[in-house]
Length: 124
Image (tube, rainbow, N blue to C red; front, side, top):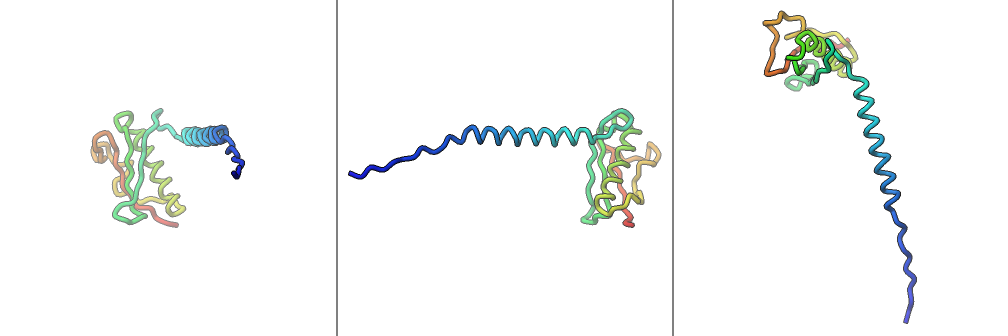
């Protein structure tokens, strides 16, 4: 009869647990870093989204909510997001507004609780 020695595999649970804890700590620190980068306008933290229009990077639309918290703050949050978008896309903050934040109150486009702005980045 042939006898073979079987080696027990090392218990990997402590290593896996340590790895999972490190990943969780990194994710939490990344979230905290993003929160510290947030900017309040008129005392309110707005949610702002930006995106290109009709597959044209230079044309963009910004959505800012909740506009009900402060119309003036939403205007400035939209302007800020537009500048960020144009700098990221073209390295320039020059914008030609189609529906901009400086329009009169009655002329601003508001859908639900979201202010909508449109413009064109003008690359340097």
